[in-house]
Length: 284
Image 1 (cartoon, helix red, strand yellow):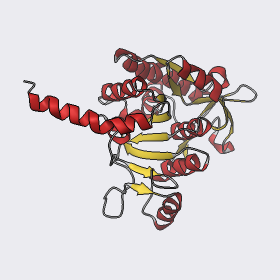
Image 2 (cartoon, rainbow, N blue to C red):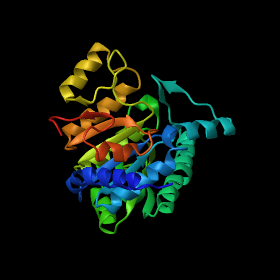
Image 3 (cartoon, rainbow, N blue to C red):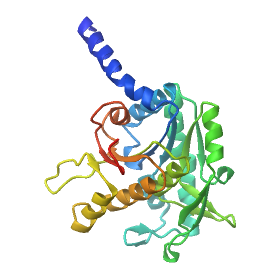
């Protein structure tokens, strides 16, 4: 039963969020959602994205989908090889990756956002040459690193009230399809748009110290120091490196947060404390 107290609590929450809503009006926020977060949390995530658009935030969603690629490769009996934890992308594997990311995962997210009242449009980095790449390490095969981002197309979508949902499939200057790391793609897109925020949703709360306590704020210098000392290790290293590159290239701040937390995006953007690790040059 809804009581007066419930309504008062809701009204108080909205009132406290108002300054943050005003602060982000007409800003750009790029959100990277990993394949692990696409599941039970997708409906909550979609509602967050729709609300962001409704209050005037230009939202961009970049997604991964590595687990679904693995399942598809296993089902087809296609073996993968890895170098230092990175998948070698043969032409056959890139074809499967594009099919899974652009054809399945992308549309799943688009449908979820549209079901909640948004107007999402699914694209990949190949569309309109949004993400032109150069080859990464040769031994990794058809893996790309973003070189040029067509930000004009994305801004045109904003003007029409659309929410771009981007699969991390890029194209080389000679037209070759390339597989791109999702975090790397999101960082490059956020930098090209001079985004106010890049949110990297993962399956942990953020950067943790040696006692597994969340570190709420870090400067780029502190990130580098923590990588050297071993506080930041494993899979968190590439995420923080993406954050470093983004803040150096014009993104105001990057936040690494747990995408499995209900309404994690709203909690990060519209509360005074946030819920993840914020990385920036100065206090935000």
